Image 1 (spheres, rainbow, N blue to C red):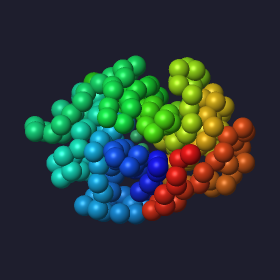
Image 2 (image 1 turned 180 degrees about the horizontal axis):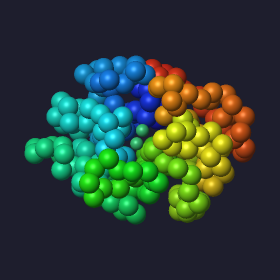
Image 3 (image 1 turned 60 degrees about the vertical axis):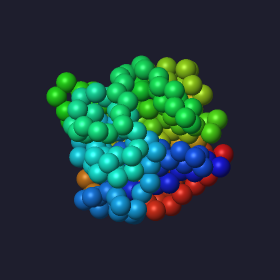
Image 4 (image 1 turned 135 degrees about the vertical axis):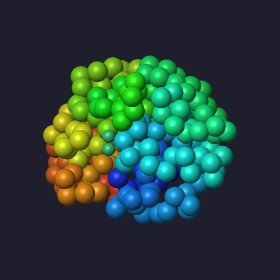
Length: 219
Ligand code: NI
Ligand code: MN
């Protein structure tokens, strides 16, 4: 069993039945949030960058659940003492109890001095899941797909701050992803998009439109 639980905006959890990998834990103040911070469990928390709609509730989640936080060192410095943390950087791979986490580039600002924005390739349950984070389209997404066969790509489509549906459809092609899940849209009017229109633009991959509060099995 490998499930994708979507909590709204860019916040999701991947659960292999043992580990719960929470990504970009933004609940408080998230207009799209389907749950409260206090209702979510995690064994790992991954953060892509330090903008408020991604770093969100990371400190309270990590303290409450005793999860291990994984992100760049500049963000871990904000997390405070006592938290279980793994600092890593672009190009690095960390073995975990569920598989591995590889930190990959994202083309976006970091929200913290000296930091970089990142994405992740998460190997869990025998699948490779690419969580792009906030990013523009970039050609080296091809290299991400060459290194790891991408079973699921979780991509922003909202535009304005990130890729829009046209560029995200191109990203799917660069990655060679088999499945794609759009995120980071319709939280606010400024990133309003029609995911069905995105689905029409995607060639050679299955698009899974998941609403906040919904879950799907990753197969
Ligand atoms: Ni951002
Ligand atoms: Mn964002």
